[in-house]
Image 1 (spheres, rainbow, N blue to C red):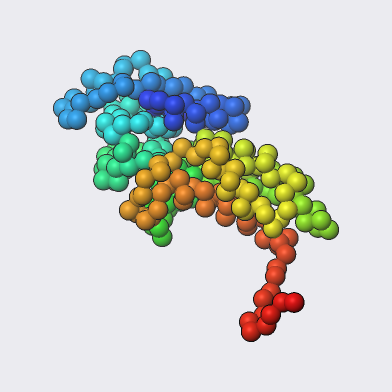
Image 2 (cartoon, rainbow, N blue to C red; image 1 turned 30 degrees about the horizontal axis):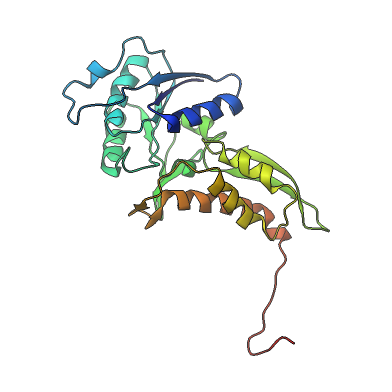
Length: 253
């Protein structure tokens, strides 16, 4: 699969570095450094897109200013791309209205575009844009990409006697590499403490999602991302956790 990543800063570069390091060897990833600033109104977006961009099947839009989203249809047309992933890890970079417009513009071109919010909600069949707001999609290119990067997924082995984590396999990493960081820190941790530890590891990575309150979640996207990571770990260790029962109306000695 041929991939073109549009970046404008450290956010996108960090994603690209992780994808290159841990993605399938048969993927080819090129990068276009978008202009550092763009006018508020662009009458001719094509003037800001170079003619010599490499052909690609999939576009990853990691821009850090709203105007970059307006360039994506021009990029897609010039390079012949068939699918686009344009995450919303910050409303300042890709507001929800512009994300909706982008999906519509590309749909009119016969191109599937997903706008996961945050980026680590992406799976091979759906993504989320808010609390209890899930969008399903069908696209083989995005699905293939999302089998490797998106909503974190683990295979965790636990010593049944000691209830200690002995191995962690990352089935699907976060774009930024946070899942691999969490996996390394879980070895030797009790199943009872694994979810809390995963949350701390996620927080210390750190996550690249926004720390401002997002009205679609009534929470920060960073916090939503952390909960996704904790849930992925919790799903694996739940059978090994020790269940404690408390009887109401009694006192301990």
